[in-house]
Amino acid sequence: MSPLDSGGPSPTAVDRVADAVRAEILTGVLAADAPLREEAASERYGVSRHTVRAAFQRLVAERLAVAVPYRGVRVTSFDRATIIALQQLRAALEVEAVRIAGERYGQAWPDAATRA
Image 1 (cartoon, rainbow, N blue to C red):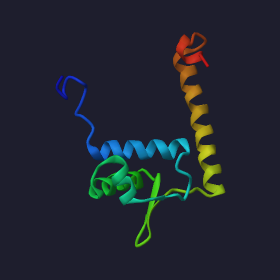
Image 2: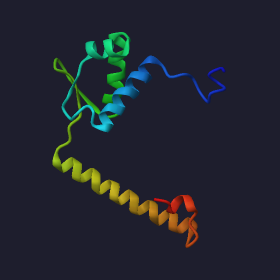
Image 3: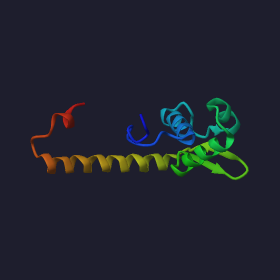
Image 4: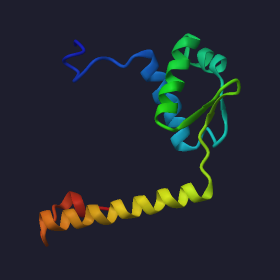
């Protein structure tokens, strides 16, 4: 099967490392403020440090990690005010999603939208 047949190109080594570390951050395996070490990740994933560095920079761009000059890369940590603001944003988006669904479907929502 060619990359075109599978719906797109195969993930690169950078993609695979970024995906793996992202999953560990989002599931809590890597705690807030945990250091992300290039050398350890390079050994763990069997890739070059350059590949790991590129993957970490992708996570920095996504704001899941923070790069501090001369101090390395760490998992992002949110203060209380930021967490509250994010939760308020999420609540507002969920209310808006329900409003839009109500306009679109009225009283007859599809089963998939009402399943828990």
